[in-house]
Figure 1 (cartoon, helix red, strand yellow):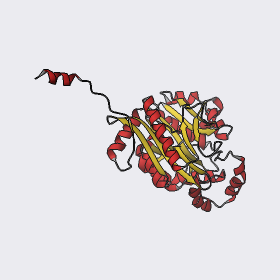
Figure 2 (tube, rainbow, N blue to C red):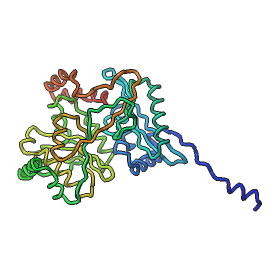
Figure 3 (tube, rainbow, N blue to C red):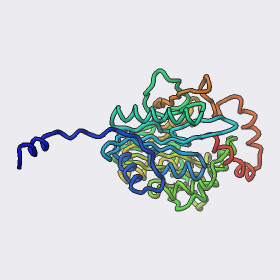
Figure 4 (cartoon, rainbow, N blue to C red):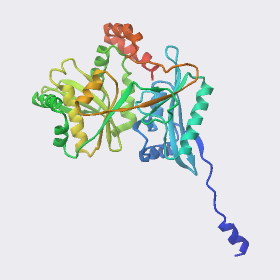
Amino acid sequence: MTMADEEVREVPITSSKLVVRRLESDDREQIGRWDAFVSNCSNATFFHKAGWQKIVGEVFNHQTYFLYAERNEVIEGVLPLGHVSSLLFGKSLVSLPFAVYGGIAANTPEAVKLLEDEAQSIARKLGVDQLELRNTKQRHPDWPTQNLYVSFRKELKPEAEANMLAIPRKQRAMVRKGIKNGLRSEIDETVDRFFSLYADNVHRHGTPAMPRRYFEALLKEFGKDCEVLTAVDAGGRPLSSVLSFYFRDEVLPYYAGDDLTARDQAANDFKYWELMRRACERGIKIFDYGRSKQGTGSYSFKKNWGFEPQPLFYEYCLYRRDSIPQNNPANAKYRLLIAAWRRMPISLANWLGPFIVRNLG
């Protein structure tokens, strides 16, 4: 071995440049690496999972841009994006449509900057009105921020009874009422009972329902990480149902529906207690009650369970508009539409609803 050989071996190998790539929906190796990163990244959420690319693209027919930053084939950050283009509500690039959480999940500041730069470049090329990042933590104090929503999260205690006693007294009485009424919970293998209750529920509130095939796709795509729990009365009649997501040591009840008689039997309260009890028994440590609009009944209901609101930072980079869009039922301009929707036959509402919700994101 010559001195020259030894000198060559001693030269340090410089790390490769960090680059942004786009996830290919049919590349199993890429998808596996993406999901492995999401599972281990502390600021990632269930909505960063690669399966959402298929859901958003195939169910709602939105163009997706699932970006990841990698160096030496090691992923350092991901950013799932969906392009929502609507004649009614404008054009936006969102992370992520139909998700309460999104934005960049990354381990390094360099990956955050590179992914954000690429997102803005795509947004400009698409000519969207805004780029929307549904962050759980603030990244851009100088960007306009939607302050309408909050989340509710709480640690579960190891024992079921301890969680029952942690519920404030009045709310705990409602749970016990459901138990006294002989209600029980069942895990469903299909969305049949859930969708019937959900569609009827949202129709009563004057809002369009997601398509049935969306929920079927969720069960198929996420498997054991997506679960339907239905509360039934002593005779087996379904009263209340919830579709939940499981991610690491968390459970997130995401979509729900109730029968008109559910309130009288405390079925809604019982349903969430059963979800909490079952989650506790399987070792889940965080109960994420999800997103609610401030000042709504849902907001008050979750506070009554002893959960405290935590702000969500939906940040916007505006390109072709001067203010944040308010495409939600709290907007006063939708009051007449909501009233009309309530009067519409539910069969027509369920047919028409998917054409509207796909444009909302």
